[in-house]
Image (cartoon, rainbow, N blue to C red):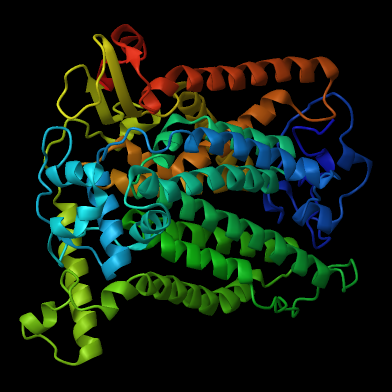
Length: 573
């Protein structure tokens, strides 16, 4: 049976006093990374006490010998089940819900004109804007609803191009503008499972993380709604996975180089070797550029992930025994990091190609109209800068009250989820419903998952601070990069659904803690049995609660009492 945890021999030992270069040092001066996952005092000798681990086993722990139908088959199966739920009746409700009124229409005009356009009546009607009602009734009349070609978009274009791809394939309909969000939300399940497997060297911990993401209500709702934040989550997760693969490949090359030397300590003048083009790190930088090109909330993720990758590199240089590791680190990383930053900026700039090559986009002629610069390229760049400047001030000063605005400190406990859609009998614009029938789409994360994950994040903070566990630190890095951005703008109008960007990292933390509860593969049998019972009960309870809340996540028709039973807190109403 596949273990929920890697064997002891695949984990760094933080008790030994010998570092990777063969030099003896005190415990506080050890050059190795911390990474022990389970503590077993006074039981039986650990594997590494029978013999020292090799450098390769320490820096690049091996995966368990498992067939591909396990390592790929189970994550894909979880993805397919989660994808089925996300695509089932994806076009319902046949409604422009919440901020789809902006992004569905912006996406449609972006794929037709290369930029957003203005519409005759974007003002709210009863339930939907008047233009939205006309589009739902007959999407073919959309050209008659466009007022001008200068739509005042306040977000970069990547997410709208992605939504527009689904509309191009399936038409200007709810299914069309929700198709690509559902694809990204489904692929994120597979990515989460595979990334967690790589982090923990355990297929079952990876599957647990993927299963938890599949059962999260907020990720589910965002996968079925044409908003931008699901793409922020997707590109953030993709960038994290790319940097993680680069970490393994870089260390493999470094170990290959180190093994070409004798096992004795390296001479002082030995420098770090060239490692060639690091394609996965480049891919990660491109993903960060696309993340920023979706929404500016991805801004903090760029320095956080780059610093995390740099720290991984420095730890590896130190671990192989290079004495002047700081000199080699700065010599190598200064110019590489600069190039990666330029690549992120170039990717972000390239996402505005549609705006640059057309003439009617918002602010496109600002420089000419204000007699600023008349050279074609420089004029476009000056207009682009002014667009960014005014958009920044719009976001910073957006403080108009909203019934479902929430403080980011309350997100982890689901203090104020966002209501996307609500219908009852005789409500204007709603489908015909019988007395006492209700429908709702509430962007609510599965409560027990979020509460357990919050405990797991606190545990990860202890692991990182007290044990220097790089996995816990990486999870916290991704979590804080996507969350801390909003803590700076508590005066601004913000919503709980922005939190979908860090949901995969919450699932990583929760799966990590579940693996610890189960215990190591070589733990005593009764310890494993009781651990499996507790971890299994937590997982089953989360899945049951997702099913329980499913009706208010997918606009199922339920009675008023059934709806009220699911409103656990008054702030959810």
